[in-house]
View 1 (cartoon, rainbow, N blue to C red):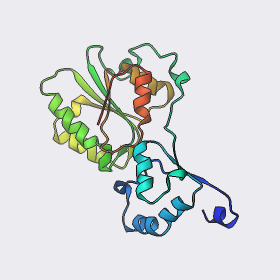
View 2 (view 1 turned 135 degrees about the horizontal axis):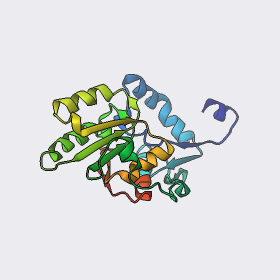
View 3 (view 1 turned 60 degrees about the vertical axis):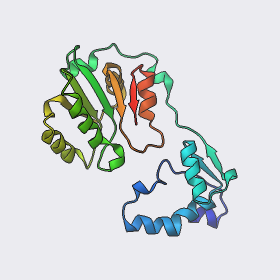
View 4 (view 1 turned 45 degrees about the vertical axis):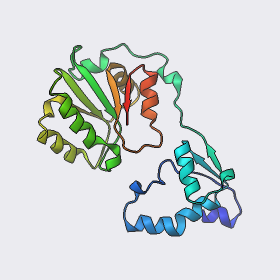
Length: 208
């Protein structure tokens, strides 16, 4: 920002969901936003919003309409043209063909807005009337895995939850294909690319 101002270089900024106060990480982040954050936004030549909601957040921070452009995320559809045969992911993880698989794919993060605690609590209720259902949680640990596992143990559903770790490339696509439903439990999400990926694989989705 300083370099751009010093040499009069226009710059484009994309907040990507960081405007919401849920993301604040204490007083240091608050001070930064008050002193520098708004100034960096207002000095930008253009501000890219992923959705109309994020565009409205810019407006609420005093950004003029002519600086805001809405450009949604996208996915590379060619990566989903030749889908793997159904069953590969299930075989790798000893899941039966008769098991109903609910898939979550994303970071295992402690922030409440990811909704992982909501997901496992809802799943615990689901296991009571249904047999042979599995919740697959695929993603890297971002500081919440041990707490989430404790919650799952306390709910008595440890045998019904599978953690795969981070899935990449073909492994990720195989998980989408073999899932009966994909769930995005976030209480706030600017734009969930994983929903587009699940749809590209023909997998039904449940979003909050």
